[in-house]
Length: 135
Image (cartoon, rainbow, N blue to C red; front, side):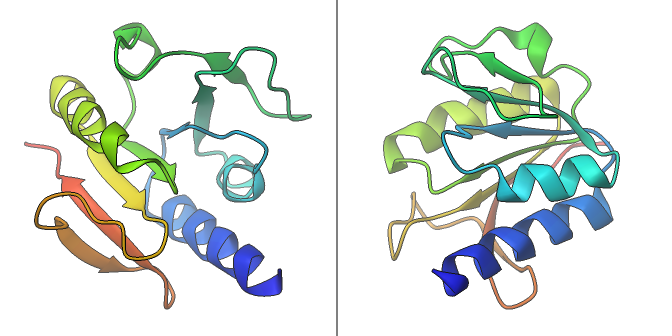
């Protein structure tokens, strides 16, 4: 279990140190990374498809990434997701392109979408940068 939390802490620290307006997609019951990003003042909100998810101190909104409410993401400089199903990655890429922000994904095991994007080292944890904002 400690390795699992190390991964979440590494992801949260990486995002908190590089971004100012982050949105976590698919928070579920795992708020570790979001809490670190929020503590740095960089978390806008979290989303999940399941209604009723709550984490004290975090804003969690119900949204379907396959039909996203674009207003939730418009001012983000990064969208990130921890262990999403691979089928969720294409709509995440599309959303990041639409709002012109970075997209970082931490995959479950060796589950990678397409060419895996650009691999980013987040303190020994591999994140996949599938979309980079355009200037």
